[in-house]
Image 1 (cartoon, one colour):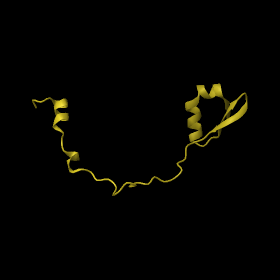
Image 2 (cartoon, helix red, strand yellow):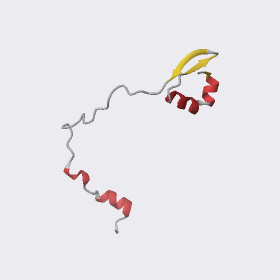
Image 3 (spheres, helix red, strand yellow):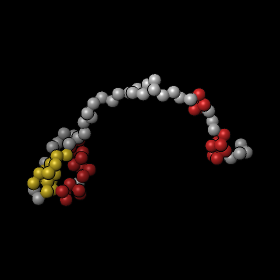
Image 4 (cartoon, one colour):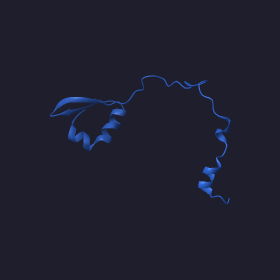
Length: 77
């Protein structure tokens, strides 16, 4: 499918859905092909745990902060 830029602007959501479902969509300017609209494909698998062992969570990290609690709930809980 080839569409000119003006039509692509007006129907972008529809064209994205078509490209996502495998249809080839080419966007043209003055009927000359400029770009192809294609579905995104990840380049590689995500790697989890890259910082494992390089960061230590402080013991007081999960403790409530009195000053912040006072701002939310007031001093007279």
